[in-house]
Length: 363
Image 1 (cartoon, rainbow, N blue to C red):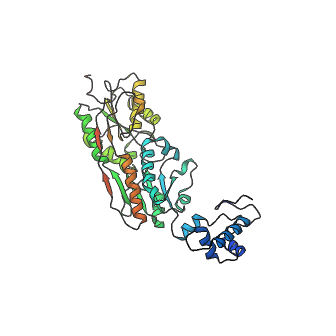
Image 2: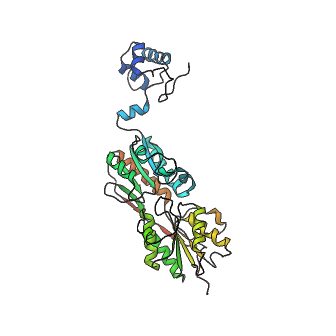
Image 3: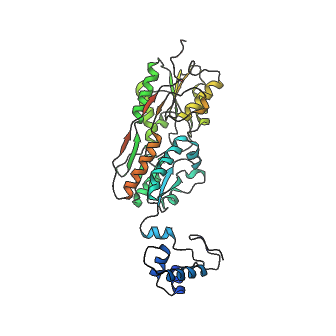
């Protein structure tokens, strides 16, 4: 008879075998039976074989590791919240590298990483359902909104939280990058080239599907610290600029934002995209309209990912240490699980001038 996998459901009408039942069948105490399975104590070979034989007869596969870990107060699982649909985590190179770094840092401790979607609009579990999952700690890996209800639910449960790129709250351990400084340096580079008519292709300001040119009301409800910092830095250099919001950080949405920004008669001579994926989309939009980059339009991004869509061209961008962010996040989680509160981390970024930025043509 095939042994039933621990944690699975017993067939209808049958009761799951228990360790106590195995112990009774083998004629030993439950503690001796437990030691026989774990191999962590002195049990005679004949006794161990008797216990294992009784387990086979009862189709008992052994103590449930999840139940055992929960009795110790640990599940061995760290949740990683992705603000959008989980598909986003596999399409965005920044999210992929970040999550890989976290998993790499957690691996030596035997802790697993569970991806959680914080977006209940597309068939994901509700925030209440997600918040009840047995996790030892949570990383808000992408799109950590300042007023995220899921964040508050985890904090009320006393679950340790590491927030990547925000939000910044007293109860959180935060790891972020110099978003404002990097965006300001990028904006100064564009200004030094002589550009004055500048527009922004923005990351989602909130995860509500909003898109298109934004107004003052939309500016007032920006929910993400990194998006807000990058826009504030840009407008510190140029003043208020036209902003087209993308509902998701993908190339196709960058292309839509680019078409909007380039549609008017007084088009910008430079577009600052808040991510490299959006910048690639803007370049596609420009080329579809017959514009040359950078001759007719300067396009710059943020992140420093590989951009194979651009061929030999090198995107002017702000490079952030994505893999290091992931590994440091994993180490911070490990510290929290050990009962220590790590200090917040603020990582530097670096401007990389490529071939997609140049002075504007005389017009």
